[in-house]
Length: 281
Image (tube, rainbow, N blue to C red; front, side, top):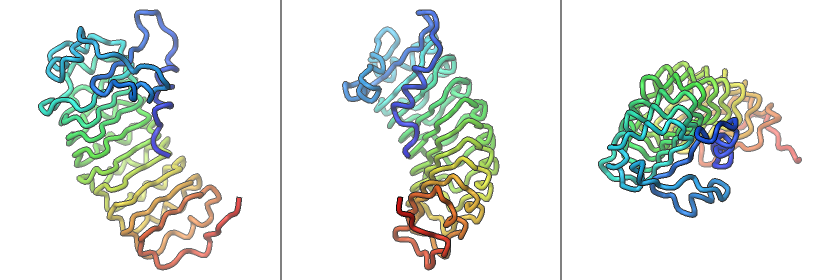
């Protein structure tokens, strides 16, 4: 399990009801719009850099143009922009049809109006300098995947719990995040959680409310013990634990018929519960 993957994201766009020709969602990429990037979407071009929109002129052109007038845009993919490109233009909040926003290795520190993208389903902010999520972040209730891996985020807002449709959350290598807010347990649709190499030192007890969770990845964290409520997650298929783990693991885990992968490499676990069995399928 690794997020939705490019195919599922492409299907999000293809699943949009057919609209009049002038309103069809557009896919637009800036930098990295190579043949390899096209292959990521099943051989279909993500979109061509159009100089008339400011794309192809570098970050400065993008920021100067009123790109928010492209209200039918379905996806924006930005990669390796100039060093001084630190904020998306406020007009990006006018992209009413946008479903996917992917920003890779761009030095943005702010997302001013992204909270207005009410139809957004995938928000990928890999390698950004982002320190905080926007105040209206909790209003993005269509969001299915959130991945700010390697971002400089220090904490998640309490409104984070409003993302009722969120299925995949990756805080991988977000080393400044040490805890998640109490409403974390309200993410009832979440089925994949990746906190590998993050700054988290514990999982909240509210994790027991995440009944749909199928995969938890924690390698590289400084978590010393698993919360006992984790034993109530009956649909769990994969549990990748950090090497800092010690003591015992909840005995209830051994009763999970759905559990297929349990990684305890380099941990200080001294005893496995007798309930754990190896099934030959």
